[in-house]
Image 1 (cartoon, rainbow, N blue to C red):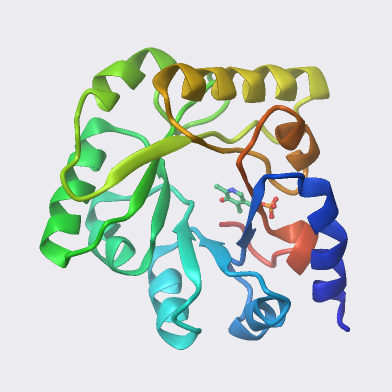
Image 2 (cartoon, rainbow, N blue to C red; image 1 turned 30 degrees about the vertical axis):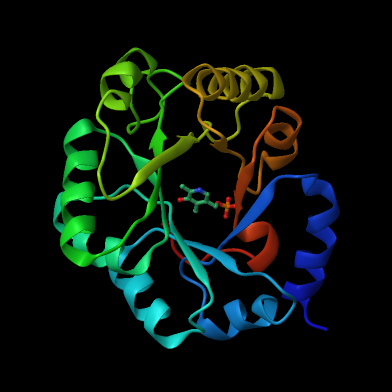
Amino acid sequence: MSVISEQYRALLPSLGSARLVAVSKTFPAADILEIYNCGQRSFGESRAPELAEKAKALPADIEWHFIGHLQANKVRPVVEAAGWIHAVDSLKLLERIDRIAGESGRHPKLLLEVNVSGEESKFGLRPELLPEVLAFKPEHCKVVGLMTMAPDGAPEAELRRIFTTLAGLAKSAGLPEISMGMSGDYPVAVACGATMVRVGSAIFGRREYLK
Ligand SMILES: *Cc1c(COP(=O)(O)O)cnc(C)c1O
């Protein structure tokens, strides 16, 4: 058994009922297949061309999660390959995804990215804008949850504040999915009610380049 499957198996018991999105960005198909063969089916990518290439080359029963910042001109390839899109951060983007989903005959599940930490993160909706975005009812896709990223290296009290806030916002909006927690902070996210964690380097090892 190689290091990747060992790290994968060691991680699973600490996730409780949260589902694992194994973040495979920058890692080769062989690494993905290694934990695919241990039973993992959900994988996360953050670049549209890399997602398209991997989706074409790897088994069709993989459920692809697009977790990165989505630019308007990349919506089509992402909608064609991903079953889940985690970081929808504007009404305009949501409307565009819905239109292209209609044209492509696809029905992705969507999460709205919320910036609950304040200035530190560039992307994500301010919480007060959520009602306006949620008032839009897409025809071809469904908003199923909220997602956030905590600032790198935030102290545990700050992580708890961020994750608890996101869970509360999802609950009051009646959204079942809460996507939060990465390699450095997933235990706190799980304790605060994450339904999905997005973990990459704790399974696959260090990435050579970011995002
Ligand atoms: C890369 C990435 C992750 C995973 O990060 P790790 O620290 O490798 O676990 C999670 N979420 C998003 C949005 C990412 O871009």
